[in-house]
Length: 328
Image (cartoon, rainbow, N blue to C red; front, side, top):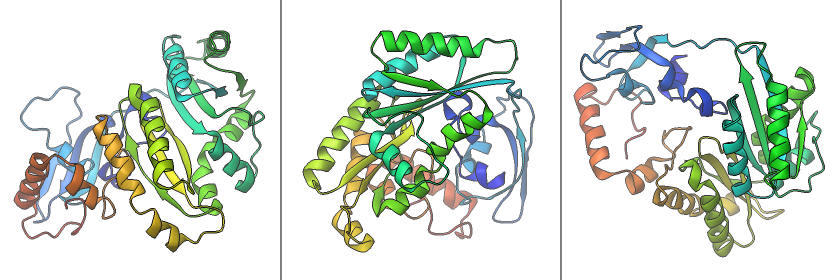
Protein backbone atom coordinates (compact mmCIF):
# COMPACT_ATOMS: atom_id res chain seq x y z
CA UNK A 1 0.00 0.00 0.00
CA UNK A 2 2.84 2.39 0.80
CA UNK A 3 4.22 1.96 -2.69
CA UNK A 4 0.83 2.56 -4.31
CA UNK A 5 0.45 5.77 -2.31
CA UNK A 6 4.02 6.90 -2.89
CA UNK A 7 3.47 6.64 -6.64
CA UNK A 8 -0.10 8.00 -6.45
CA UNK A 9 -1.25 4.99 -8.44
CA UNK A 10 -4.12 5.48 -10.86
CA UNK A 11 -5.69 3.20 -13.41
CA UNK A 12 -8.89 2.04 -15.02
CA UNK A 13 -11.30 3.19 -12.31
CA UNK A 14 -9.86 6.65 -11.68
CA UNK A 15 -12.94 8.03 -13.45
CA UNK A 16 -15.00 7.07 -10.39
CA UNK A 17 -12.69 7.07 -7.36
CA UNK A 18 -9.71 9.14 -8.41
CA UNK A 19 -6.03 8.35 -7.97
CA UNK A 20 -4.62 6.94 -4.74
CA UNK A 21 -4.32 10.38 -3.10
CA UNK A 22 -8.09 10.85 -3.35
CA UNK A 23 -8.67 7.96 -0.94
CA UNK A 24 -6.20 9.03 1.75
CA UNK A 25 -7.25 10.75 4.99
CA UNK A 26 -3.92 10.65 6.78
CA UNK A 27 -0.39 9.21 6.75
CA UNK A 28 2.44 8.11 8.97
CA UNK A 29 5.81 8.81 7.35
CA UNK A 30 9.40 8.15 8.38
CA UNK A 31 11.47 11.19 7.45
CA UNK A 32 15.10 11.15 6.23
CA UNK A 33 16.43 12.12 9.68
CA UNK A 34 14.56 9.28 11.38
CA UNK A 35 11.73 11.34 12.84
CA UNK A 36 8.19 10.02 12.36
CA UNK A 37 5.49 12.30 11.02
CA UNK A 38 2.21 11.20 12.64
CA UNK A 39 -0.56 12.64 10.48
CA UNK A 40 -2.95 9.68 10.75
CA UNK A 41 -6.15 11.66 11.17
CA UNK A 42 -9.30 9.86 10.05
CA UNK A 43 -11.52 12.86 9.42
CA UNK A 44 -12.72 14.23 6.10
CA UNK A 45 -12.40 17.84 7.26
CA UNK A 46 -9.10 19.13 8.63
CA UNK A 47 -7.99 22.68 7.89
CA UNK A 48 -5.30 22.83 10.56
CA UNK A 49 -2.55 24.08 8.27
CA UNK A 50 -0.75 22.60 5.28
CA UNK A 51 -1.96 19.18 4.06
CA UNK A 52 1.45 17.58 4.56
CA UNK A 53 0.33 14.15 3.38
CA UNK A 54 0.18 15.41 -0.19
CA UNK A 55 3.94 15.99 -0.18
CA UNK A 56 4.45 12.23 0.16
CA UNK A 57 1.55 11.04 -2.00
CA UNK A 58 3.12 10.84 -5.43
CA UNK A 59 6.51 11.87 -4.06
CA UNK A 60 8.00 8.56 -5.23
CA UNK A 61 9.93 8.10 -2.00
CA UNK A 62 12.04 11.22 -2.48
CA UNK A 63 10.89 12.85 0.78
CA UNK A 64 10.14 9.96 3.14
CA UNK A 65 8.86 6.42 3.55
CA UNK A 66 5.12 5.90 4.08
CA UNK A 67 4.63 3.38 6.89
CA UNK A 68 0.89 3.68 7.65
CA UNK A 69 -2.18 5.24 6.08
CA UNK A 70 -5.77 6.03 7.02
CA UNK A 71 -7.88 5.36 3.95
CA UNK A 72 -11.39 6.31 2.90
CA UNK A 73 -13.27 3.09 2.21
CA UNK A 74 -16.13 2.89 -0.30
CA UNK A 75 -19.04 0.42 -0.20
CA UNK A 76 -18.53 -2.90 -1.96
CA UNK A 77 -20.12 -3.11 -5.39
CA UNK A 78 -23.19 -5.34 -5.53
CA UNK A 79 -23.97 -5.03 -9.22
CA UNK A 80 -21.66 -4.54 -12.20
CA UNK A 81 -22.52 -4.42 -15.91
CA UNK A 82 -19.89 -4.27 -18.65
CA UNK A 83 -20.23 -3.48 -22.32
CA UNK A 84 -17.90 -3.61 -25.31
CA UNK A 85 -18.87 -0.99 -27.87
CA UNK A 86 -17.75 -0.15 -31.40
CA UNK A 87 -17.51 3.58 -32.13
CA UNK A 88 -16.53 5.47 -35.25
CA UNK A 89 -14.22 8.01 -33.62
CA UNK A 90 -12.98 9.46 -30.32
CA UNK A 91 -15.59 12.21 -30.73
CA UNK A 92 -18.30 9.56 -30.86
CA UNK A 93 -16.75 7.91 -27.79
CA UNK A 94 -17.00 11.13 -25.77
CA UNK A 95 -20.61 11.56 -26.83
CA UNK A 96 -21.23 8.04 -25.56
CA UNK A 97 -19.42 8.89 -22.31
CA UNK A 98 -21.69 11.89 -21.77
CA UNK A 99 -24.71 9.72 -22.43
CA UNK A 100 -23.77 6.97 -19.97
CA UNK A 101 -22.82 9.50 -17.29
CA UNK A 102 -26.28 11.03 -17.67
CA UNK A 103 -28.02 7.67 -17.35
CA UNK A 104 -28.06 7.80 -13.56
CA UNK A 105 -25.69 4.86 -13.13
CA UNK A 106 -22.19 5.01 -11.64
CA UNK A 107 -19.62 4.87 -14.45
CA UNK A 108 -16.54 3.13 -13.04
CA UNK A 109 -14.58 2.53 -16.25
CA UNK A 110 -14.49 3.99 -19.75
CA UNK A 111 -11.62 2.73 -21.87
CA UNK A 112 -10.91 3.82 -25.45
CA UNK A 113 -9.00 1.39 -27.67
CA UNK A 114 -7.71 1.85 -31.22
CA UNK A 115 -8.48 -1.00 -33.63
CA UNK A 116 -4.76 -1.71 -34.15
CA UNK A 117 -4.46 -2.41 -30.42
CA UNK A 118 -7.34 -4.89 -30.60
CA UNK A 119 -5.62 -6.61 -33.52
CA UNK A 120 -2.38 -6.85 -31.54
CA UNK A 121 -4.19 -8.56 -28.66
CA UNK A 122 -6.04 -10.86 -31.04
CA UNK A 123 -2.73 -11.90 -32.60
CA UNK A 124 -0.54 -12.21 -29.49
CA UNK A 125 -2.96 -12.72 -26.59
CA UNK A 126 -3.65 -16.01 -24.87
CA UNK A 127 -7.18 -17.11 -23.96
CA UNK A 128 -8.51 -14.02 -25.70
CA UNK A 129 -11.56 -13.87 -27.90
CA UNK A 130 -12.80 -10.72 -29.58
CA UNK A 131 -16.37 -9.85 -28.58
CA UNK A 132 -17.24 -8.69 -32.10
CA UNK A 133 -15.71 -8.48 -35.60
CA UNK A 134 -12.96 -5.85 -35.73
CA UNK A 135 -14.66 -3.67 -38.33
CA UNK A 136 -14.62 -0.37 -36.41
CA UNK A 137 -11.67 2.06 -36.10
CA UNK A 138 -12.22 2.50 -32.33
CA UNK A 139 -13.70 0.55 -29.43
CA UNK A 140 -14.89 1.41 -25.94
CA UNK A 141 -15.12 -0.69 -22.80
CA UNK A 142 -17.69 0.77 -20.44
CA UNK A 143 -18.52 -0.50 -16.98
CA UNK A 144 -21.32 0.60 -14.69
CA UNK A 145 -21.75 -0.38 -11.05
CA UNK A 146 -24.02 0.02 -8.05
CA UNK A 147 -23.61 -0.67 -4.35
CA UNK A 148 -27.25 -1.82 -4.06
CA UNK A 149 -28.40 -4.99 -5.84
CA UNK A 150 -31.82 -3.56 -6.73
CA UNK A 151 -30.43 -0.91 -9.10
CA UNK A 152 -31.51 -1.93 -12.65
CA UNK A 153 -28.06 -1.53 -14.16
CA UNK A 154 -28.61 -3.93 -17.04
CA UNK A 155 -31.66 -2.08 -18.28
CA UNK A 156 -29.93 1.26 -17.83
CA UNK A 157 -26.94 0.16 -19.91
CA UNK A 158 -29.10 -1.50 -22.58
CA UNK A 159 -31.29 1.57 -22.94
CA UNK A 160 -28.29 3.91 -23.05
CA UNK A 161 -26.47 1.88 -25.70
CA UNK A 162 -29.63 1.57 -27.78
CA UNK A 163 -29.99 5.35 -27.72
CA UNK A 164 -26.30 5.74 -28.64
CA UNK A 165 -26.64 3.41 -31.63
CA UNK A 166 -29.76 5.24 -32.78
CA UNK A 167 -27.90 8.56 -32.45
CA UNK A 168 -24.92 7.24 -34.42
CA UNK A 169 -22.54 7.40 -31.44
CA UNK A 170 -22.04 3.63 -31.52
CA UNK A 171 -22.28 1.07 -34.30
CA UNK A 172 -22.33 -2.19 -32.35
CA UNK A 173 -22.38 -3.30 -28.71
CA UNK A 174 -22.04 -6.52 -26.73
CA UNK A 175 -22.90 -6.84 -23.04
CA UNK A 176 -21.24 -9.33 -20.72
CA UNK A 177 -23.72 -12.08 -19.82
CA UNK A 178 -21.95 -13.30 -16.67
CA UNK A 179 -18.79 -12.85 -14.62
CA UNK A 180 -16.78 -15.16 -16.88
CA UNK A 181 -17.84 -13.16 -19.92
CA UNK A 182 -16.97 -9.91 -18.14
CA UNK A 183 -13.52 -11.23 -17.23
CA UNK A 184 -12.99 -12.18 -20.89
CA UNK A 185 -13.72 -8.58 -21.89
CA UNK A 186 -11.21 -7.23 -19.39
CA UNK A 187 -8.57 -9.73 -20.48
CA UNK A 188 -8.40 -7.89 -23.81
CA UNK A 189 -7.60 -4.60 -22.09
CA UNK A 190 -5.35 -6.00 -19.37
CA UNK A 191 -3.27 -8.18 -21.69
CA UNK A 192 -2.60 -5.33 -24.11
CA UNK A 193 0.71 -4.12 -22.56
CA UNK A 194 2.19 -7.62 -22.69
CA UNK A 195 0.88 -8.21 -26.20
CA UNK A 196 2.28 -4.96 -27.56
CA UNK A 197 5.73 -5.91 -26.27
CA UNK A 198 5.41 -9.17 -28.18
CA UNK A 199 4.34 -7.26 -31.30
CA UNK A 200 7.60 -5.32 -31.55
CA UNK A 201 9.51 -2.35 -30.16
CA UNK A 202 7.61 0.81 -29.38
CA UNK A 203 8.16 4.30 -28.01
CA UNK A 204 5.50 4.77 -25.33
CA UNK A 205 3.97 7.74 -23.52
CA UNK A 206 1.77 8.40 -20.49
CA UNK A 207 -0.11 11.62 -21.10
CA UNK A 208 -3.31 13.24 -19.88
CA UNK A 209 -5.40 16.02 -21.35
CA UNK A 210 -8.78 17.47 -20.38
CA UNK A 211 -11.41 14.91 -21.35
CA UNK A 212 -12.93 17.25 -23.92
CA UNK A 213 -9.51 17.57 -25.60
CA UNK A 214 -8.98 13.82 -26.10
CA UNK A 215 -10.22 13.70 -29.75
CA UNK A 216 -8.13 16.70 -30.81
CA UNK A 217 -5.09 15.37 -28.97
CA UNK A 218 -5.31 11.97 -30.68
CA UNK A 219 -5.87 13.49 -34.12
CA UNK A 220 -2.98 15.92 -33.82
CA UNK A 221 -0.62 13.33 -32.38
CA UNK A 222 -1.44 10.88 -35.15
CA UNK A 223 -0.93 13.55 -37.81
CA UNK A 224 2.40 14.80 -36.46
CA UNK A 225 3.78 11.33 -35.74
CA UNK A 226 2.91 10.21 -39.27
CA UNK A 227 4.59 13.28 -40.73
CA UNK A 228 7.85 12.62 -38.84
CA UNK A 229 7.88 8.81 -38.86
CA UNK A 230 5.64 7.57 -41.71
CA UNK A 231 7.06 4.09 -41.29
CA UNK A 232 5.85 3.91 -37.67
CA UNK A 233 2.49 2.63 -36.47
CA UNK A 234 0.63 4.61 -33.83
CA UNK A 235 -1.15 2.70 -31.08
CA UNK A 236 -3.50 4.29 -28.56
CA UNK A 237 -5.31 2.90 -25.57
CA UNK A 238 -6.30 4.53 -22.34
CA UNK A 239 -8.66 5.83 -19.75
CA UNK A 240 -10.63 8.25 -21.91
CA UNK A 241 -13.07 8.86 -19.06
CA UNK A 242 -10.38 10.79 -17.18
CA UNK A 243 -8.32 11.99 -20.18
CA UNK A 244 -5.33 9.67 -19.63
CA UNK A 245 -4.24 8.21 -22.98
CA UNK A 246 -1.28 5.92 -23.62
CA UNK A 247 0.06 6.58 -27.09
CA UNK A 248 2.85 4.58 -28.63
CA UNK A 249 4.74 4.56 -31.90
CA UNK A 250 5.58 1.03 -32.98
CA UNK A 251 8.49 0.13 -35.22
CA UNK A 252 7.96 -1.16 -38.74
CA UNK A 253 7.82 -4.94 -39.02
CA UNK A 254 11.25 -6.47 -38.62
CA UNK A 255 13.06 -3.45 -37.17
CA UNK A 256 15.11 -4.05 -34.02
CA UNK A 257 14.49 -2.33 -30.72
CA UNK A 258 17.73 -0.33 -30.51
CA UNK A 259 17.43 0.94 -34.06
CA UNK A 260 13.83 2.05 -33.61
CA UNK A 261 14.34 3.70 -30.22
CA UNK A 262 17.24 5.67 -31.68
CA UNK A 263 15.33 6.66 -34.82
CA UNK A 264 12.11 7.62 -33.02
CA UNK A 265 13.64 9.03 -29.85
CA UNK A 266 11.84 12.36 -30.33
CA UNK A 267 8.39 10.76 -30.57
CA UNK A 268 7.80 10.89 -26.82
CA UNK A 269 8.83 14.57 -26.47
CA UNK A 270 6.58 15.42 -29.42
CA UNK A 271 3.53 13.75 -27.85
CA UNK A 272 4.35 15.26 -24.45
CA UNK A 273 4.54 18.74 -25.95
CA UNK A 274 1.13 18.35 -27.60
CA UNK A 275 -0.44 17.20 -24.32
CA UNK A 276 1.05 20.09 -22.33
CA UNK A 277 0.01 22.62 -24.98
CA UNK A 278 -3.57 21.36 -24.64
CA UNK A 279 -3.50 21.94 -20.89
CA UNK A 280 -2.50 18.40 -19.96
CA UNK A 281 0.36 16.48 -18.40
CA UNK A 282 3.34 14.53 -19.72
CA UNK A 283 3.07 12.10 -16.78
CA UNK A 284 -0.45 11.03 -15.95
CA UNK A 285 -0.21 7.94 -13.77
CA UNK A 286 3.20 6.30 -14.09
CA UNK A 287 5.24 8.96 -12.32
CA UNK A 288 8.59 10.54 -13.15
CA UNK A 289 11.31 8.26 -11.78
CA UNK A 290 14.41 8.70 -13.91
CA UNK A 291 12.94 8.29 -17.40
CA UNK A 292 10.85 11.50 -17.34
CA UNK A 293 13.26 13.86 -15.61
CA UNK A 294 14.05 15.37 -19.01
CA UNK A 295 10.36 16.16 -19.44
CA UNK A 296 10.29 17.82 -16.02
CA UNK A 297 13.07 20.13 -17.17
CA UNK A 298 11.27 20.91 -20.43
CA UNK A 299 7.59 21.06 -19.53
CA UNK A 300 7.19 21.64 -15.79
CA UNK A 301 6.60 25.23 -14.70
CA UNK A 302 10.01 26.56 -13.56
CA UNK A 303 8.44 28.05 -10.44
CA UNK A 304 6.98 24.64 -9.56
CA UNK A 305 10.38 22.99 -10.03
CA UNK A 306 12.00 25.65 -7.84
CA UNK A 307 9.44 25.07 -5.08
CA UNK A 308 9.93 21.30 -5.34
CA UNK A 309 13.68 21.72 -4.98
CA UNK A 310 13.12 23.89 -1.92
CA UNK A 311 10.86 21.30 -0.31
CA UNK A 312 13.36 18.55 -1.08
CA UNK A 313 16.20 20.58 0.45
CA UNK A 314 14.18 21.35 3.57
CA UNK A 315 13.05 17.78 4.28
CA UNK A 316 16.00 15.84 2.85
CA UNK A 317 19.02 18.20 2.84
CA UNK A 318 21.49 15.33 2.45
CA UNK A 319 19.66 13.86 -0.53
CA UNK A 320 19.26 10.45 1.10
CA UNK A 321 15.81 9.56 -0.17
CA UNK A 322 15.62 7.91 -3.59
CA UNK A 323 18.42 10.08 -5.04
CA UNK A 324 18.40 10.95 -8.72
CA UNK A 325 14.65 10.61 -9.12
CA UNK A 326 11.84 13.02 -10.03
CA UNK A 327 13.69 16.37 -9.93
CA UNK A 328 15.64 17.31 -13.07
